[in-house]
Image (cartoon, rainbow, N blue to C red; front, top):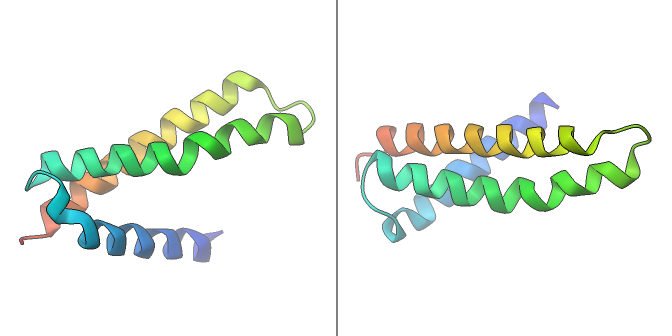
Amino acid sequence: MILGDMVAGFVFAWFYLAVAGSFAPGVPGGHDHGFLHGRADDLPGGDLHVPHVRGFPYYLSWIWIFYAIVLYVCAGAIAAAINKR
């Protein structure tokens, strides 16, 4: 799981640098990128956990999606603060 998270972090950073010109400069642009990336990454997958895992509550899936989007927003803001282009 740690290796998967590291790979996901590198992919996020690479993708941010590839499309950084499409967003506003600075932290607001990183925030927007993180929100869109998190929504696109976790919204489809979060709903898929419910039918496959016996006893997995539906509300927990929405909490999981919300947490992931907040995490990606923070990651986008940090990536934008580090990136000085």
